[in-house]
Length: 304
Length: 219
Image (cartoon, rainbow over all chains, first blue to last red; front, top):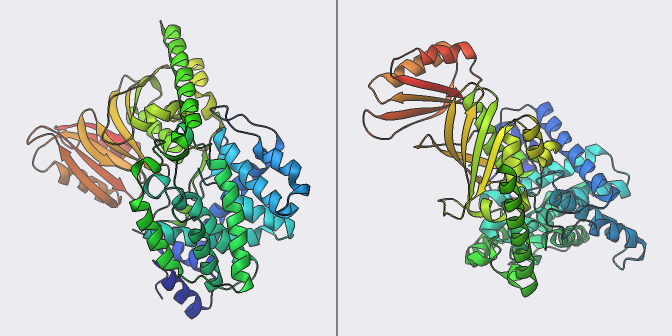
């Protein structure tokens, strides 16, 4: 059977006829399209998992200062507040983990793009912290990662995973959809429930714009990763509870692409609209430009 | 196009941006691969979004790190300017206000310790992937995803066959191949992406295969 799926329907068909999970379908997909064997594919994903774990640990171990000086310690603040969180301590810890990775990213630390650097907190934050809370082993997290990859492949093939072409819905939205689907499989759900969870996640942030202040992957990206983590957990819960996505996954992905196309260029990572264009956003960008000029002058005088 | 699951989960990289940081490292890496030795001097010009938000994304540090031979996931990227200084490499970075065809573009002029000298233009096209669009004013295009052989030559009948027959004899399979030239009988270049590495002795053979072959690089 051809394992190279291009739509959610095809993926479900493969899972059904081969009686396999989405994670296994993702591995068989990779076996078909790459020159790697099963061991190499597992090894590569293990390396990704290790970097993901390290990035959470690093983010929560001490306070960081980002390239702009704007952000860096919100994850620790969230973690310290976790026991009082209205969303519950467990959810708050997942949020803190997701923010931690994105802060490490903003401070030039090592992360795994999932699917992008700007959205890199959601998948590790949700999967690793959930596994930790429920005493699931690395094998189970790896299954989650393979499952998530299948969803990401479908979105990349039929829409986009980049903020520049589809806005934040395509970037953190995709990461959340991947995490939601992965969580469903890790919790014993069916492939259809995984796709329902992914569809509902994307629906919840349909139209979300990419408007980074001063063009940096900091504000509002880190908080959007926090939202993405909650959205993923929420939708995996809805799917496992038996709630279905009224609009099927493939149609949601196509419409996400179309909505991205309708989005004005100012709202697609160009830092010209949305929050980047607020008085405060503009001021931050101007201050950074001034600082930049100062450093270049300093650099030039060093050369002279 | 079938993307790999590791295009979705991956690469492992130093943040904050796959295009502005990881892609910039990869553009820098081309410098020492082109000269085939350590780098003595590199002048970098950043255009478009690279110039606009480059400092905040560490684009300058990332390109320098690549020039030093670092990979996109190495922690030393942050300190690359300092490292270059320590190694006595002459590096200049300019943030240009000029427009470029692609928003994330860098031009690198590099001189190797062996005296080899190149100017190339690279663009970061997303997800850490890059494309080299020009070398020494010759417009071309390749992605650096495969081992890449670049043969500079004067456009002349039969040159391609000479090169490809050497590759065939060495059992090196060609995955993709493109030929570029400025105009007929003038400067031209073959970009050959292969399935396996090409060793020094084969490169020498190719260099000597025809008189009109002026330069051979392997990236």
